[in-house]
Amino acid sequence: MAENLWAAGRIHFKYHYWFHLLAALIFCLAAPLLVGMEALNFSQTGKVLEFYFSLSGIILLTPLFAPDQNRNIRDLLRTREMPLWWLHLIRLAQALISLVILTILFLLWMRAGECTFEFLPCCLGALATCLFLGGLGVLAASLTDSLPVGYMVSMIYYVCNFGSGRDYLGPFYLFTMTEGTFDGKLWIGIAGILMILLGILWKRRRF
Image (cartoon, rainbow, N blue to C red; front, side):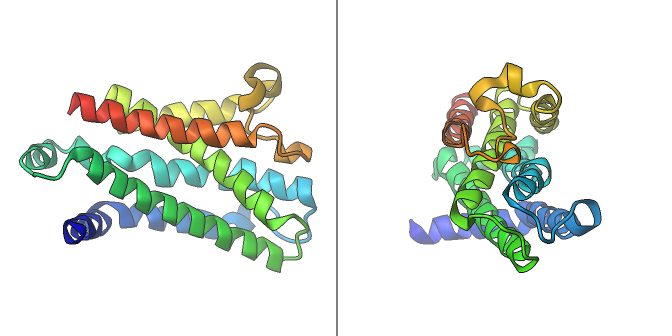
């Protein structure tokens, strides 16, 4: 069984996931061209993580069901003995590992640029924001069976956090680190995980 899981993960990465990871890497490498990355304080670091890096969660997590959009792949998966939700969990594990590594590397890059912040809390806060935006995309894509809708819903929610978003979104406001606090990050992270799991369960029901 372990060999089957490893083979399924390797095939998914080789044929479906590597270009999403590449896109996230290019997006992060472009950060110095678009945002400041040196000598930032905590609030400024939070702004970079929430305004810019958080979009990596959409890039890496939302395409969880991308292979299932292909009808031939769906028909093939129906003939396999391995349950579909196992495949989805394998894809999710790849996405989460990629996201964690990318977050750590991005923060180390900022630390090398003499930015001042608490590493672990900022790492967890950034991951929570990424999980929420990505989880929202996963759930929307699962409910509508449309990957573009998943991206669109995540981006709309992201945009809603600007302006007076703080007044309307309450504990699910994403940009608290920009204001100098970690308020709501725990609930945002939990909500992101729950949305991903609900998306997987709904996909299993519809498959």
